[in-house]
Length: 430
Image (tube, rainbow, N blue to C red; front, top):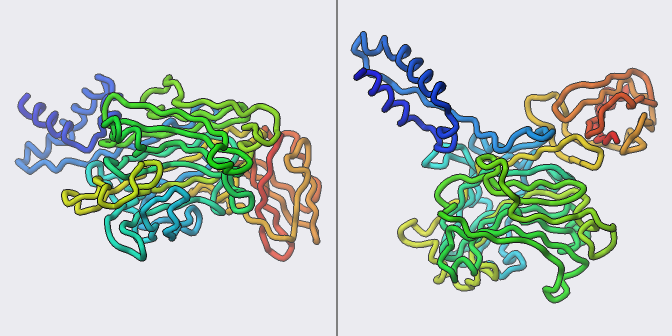
């Protein structure tokens, strides 16, 4: 019995995150104690010190539920950000259009361990330091030109910094046509923001958070249409990791907090987007591909703070630095005809990145019962792969491909030319 209590103490001291521990049933718990007891029996018999083994919990978020399948993710493993496939790092001091104080630097974005849990994370660091003509620095990164999608589910597990006062962390999205049409015509989906002046005024900086959607034909002096909600949690949401989720389909957009822990939770905000496709209506702006953004702003209009000495979140106690940690970000889709995805395929599959040249094209796309390949020369083989990386069709020496048996969804079409070149095109099956 003495040994069992010793094992129990080791079990509890292992690196087990609280929300997962609460999900362990009593039989599983007792089984685990028995397994640990048998493993350690030899150690006690031989009077050897017990070396606890690290328990690794796979954080899955809401995962592949309700027909959703994973199509893209970054788990921020390793030691370097993947700027080849996934991310573009911003370097500028333009204030983000919000009179923000920081200069965004590459050096403020790293990949490493969150010190409490040991989770490997994207780390965005805000610093009080003079750089260029700014009094502080931070980081911002986006998936523009790397990964974008239309309709689906995106979520990120984030540990937020202590925002009081002056820090403004955000997880959000913008329409991929932003470079050509500008803002707010591109549309914006703010999945999570903290640090707002309302929270500062109310003394609830660590509990007050919000989600907002923005659109419209022009800035119009700030009178553009938008919709969103704010909330005040019962306790701080800046001490631990939390899951922030956006669900987006042909009918509506919704945002959630901790949907993995509370799967029946109501959305923080809900907005219909199924109206007429005319300028001014939500349907005109939110049925196209969007890209993801993480940033940690300092000061600015959102916070109501415009001087670095009023940014109390960066202080001597934290060496004038503060970190935002992102454990992972993931995109899921249901494989329905209105969805689109552009970006790298999931790792551990043989699907190549979606990248086409001018040798071949396919139509119609979206497809019904067939696709036609228009070549400058006959392809030697056409392979159709689903978004899980599974080959579902292979046809040799053909330009008309029967797709009638394929379920609705998104696919990659790999076209092999007689010169050995392989092109990959995205196709949607209705």
